[in-house]
Figure (cartoon, rainbow over the protein chains, first blue to last red):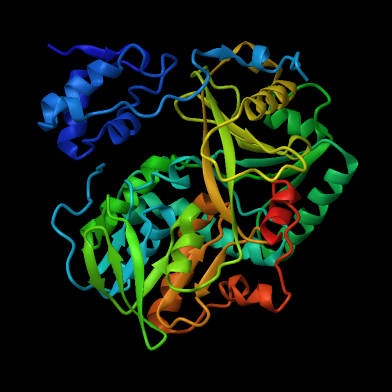
Length: 89
Length: 400
């Protein structure tokens, strides 16, 4: 039975296992190959679950796996809000 | 830090050529050299393939430039892009959805007109389009935003990571060794010629080194005592959540110093530059950059107001004083080749790799490559290209 780990892009544990078997065996390259961590939640929901799956499949020490650098904005923001004039300017 | 195709074994003691940087330049060149019969090719990458600007760029592809030098190089590249997936037997997700440069003022339209004339001279298929045609090509564009533009129907975009991985695998099949996590710490010279490189995985002997280190190219050249006249500058980009298709071609917005496209996954991806600002070499993004991009893109595409930005990132480029790449043998050091100084590197890589591989395997510099030699700066013959969507302050920063 497959389990959905990334709810934004419907990435399952089987997708992660396949990526690792193909040779995408680091969180940075798993992210780019599967799209996990790249949806609107930016990995806040799925990040740790994806790292668990990478460790399970690759045999890497789980404690050695780090999530890719988190990028702004902290939460998805409509572009119209970011486009508003800067009140401090 | 791995992708399929990278070397799993140890670094060997000697190679015929060592390419520094497994970005799209170094990988494309490695593959072109290998298919011309060169053996014992090694690509050294400090991080993972595509970790630098090759995985951070805007993915756009065009050859519709205004100068003969740029148009010739980038049209060779565009022709390569159209057949690249078949040549590599790997997917690049190249999408020839067209590339539209949009003018919002009469002065910008004049520039488009001059570009289109030049394209006709050079045999590059573009069309000068009027306001109505622009809005037909990009229905989501704000009313009265455009006065016209120049359209290249066979331009478009590709997926940067897919293309990097495609080159890695195709090169590996031809025997190229791509070593990730291996930093070059020194370049060894003997009698003014390349003799080897020092790396974090030990020394390597070689007679030929290529500097394809992207944002770090100036530092790498300095290891061989070569001063490359570039400055390292940051570019920022943003991506939105996936939405249904609203934007078909790749677009450059001259009035906003902006460029953007909608990916095949539905995300809107784009970047803007700000007038008069020489960006620093920091890889951190700025709130000012995010606000600038949001303000400009919502002005061009009002529907974006309600679409969420999910990520903003930065990449660094090492730009030359005329913003054109520096390609060819390095002056003063036998066996050292330069493939650096890129700003439009993703779209230009497949073509530049063909020309550099030809030069390296025949000792004859192809006509299309010659203008990009580093010697142009010393001779006071910079390449003048008017249709770049970057601010002239970037060039000023590079020549300062």
